[in-house]
Length: 130
Image 1 (tube, rainbow, N blue to C red):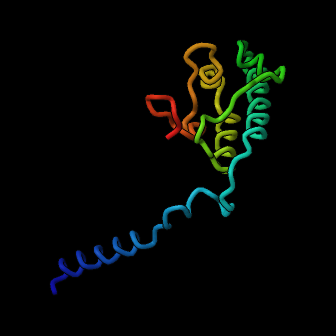
Image 2 (tube, rainbow, N blue to C red):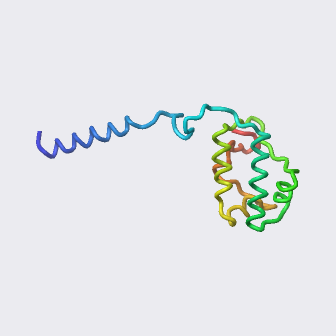
Image 3 (cartoon, one colour):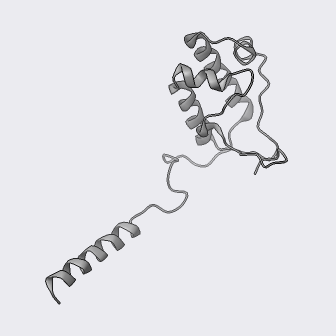
């Protein structure tokens, strides 16, 4: 075997080893937590607290900010959507870490956006959770 072939062989073995060392599906992202369904009421109560605090910090006003701060927010998951506790934690962290420009888009009265970390259950064209 020439040195060129030996180098190619060695790189192939190294790449195969790296690919085989990858975590199995489902083993990443949970930080050792057991999979548990996210409690809808607790999540949206905490999200309202975050929304209100961020609206105050960023000087944002509007219907979403008002509802979050006065406790009348009525958000819910779409039918068939069952996110996990870890999903909710990631979403709340993303909301807390967002800058004011991004947050303004999240609570806009028209054309509000959703951070990707909070898009638990994308909707199909008929409005049902996928």
